[in-house]
Image 1 (cartoon, rainbow, N blue to C red):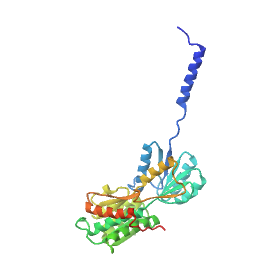
Image 2 (image 1 turned 30 degrees about the vertical axis):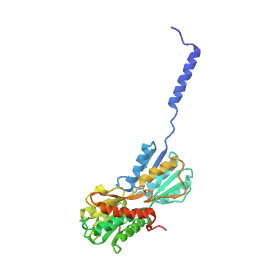
Image 3 (image 1 turned 90 degrees about the horizontal axis):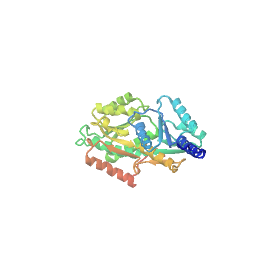
Image 4 (image 1 turned 45 degrees about the horizontal axis):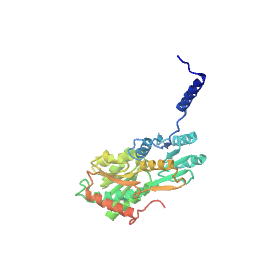
Length: 336
């Protein structure tokens, strides 16, 4: 048997060493994005819609994490935001509703950290603000609500009277933007339509939302527009139990009560999150600026319950959308 020479042993050892180094070299960390929440998943609306964007990014190889928190524990919201900012492990940190003051305090302390602040605005050089033209989507919801309230032949659960309602979480500018658009849309169909506006006082009390919805219906509302976040599940159930119509919000809520929910006004939060992650990865995100998602770029829209809304009514609503997108009609806003 011929022995391997010392020279060959050196070559083999060097080759094995190279293989070992190649095998143990740390892989480059994937792009990472974290969402610091002021609430929990499972709302069938805003947060669940947001999650769809992170799920899509995860399929593209992005490392994601969603930090849930009790809606009644603002101290934890701040702690979570500080923790992920101090860690330095996230390429971009997302946060949203109820986090304005927290982000305003934390972001300046981390000038190299990138943040995306959605459904609100903060003018800082390392923050990309994302807002939605909920007034435009609500305009379409108002058109549909007015038609459904007054066209008893097509919508047999209605009395035919021009009475509709909005049950909303809190009296905030962003919520007023929903209401302004909804009223304008309804008035284009029935100029003297009556629109009740009722505030719950929070976004989490589904029982109170249920009770207020029943009150609105007892006062004559044929259609109730849900603008209440997690509490909105009570609105939809209240309308269903009273055998009247409702319009959902944020996510597609049509299937929750398919005999009563006419449509849902989508705020395409998931789409905007996925889009923002792509922009940050590509180095094209415009930090320090505001990006708005509306009807023209599919940031908001109306998804119909096909079993309840006839084609002719859809055409009427879609014609209203075309006027907004085409610039022939300007939807009013609560923001100056």
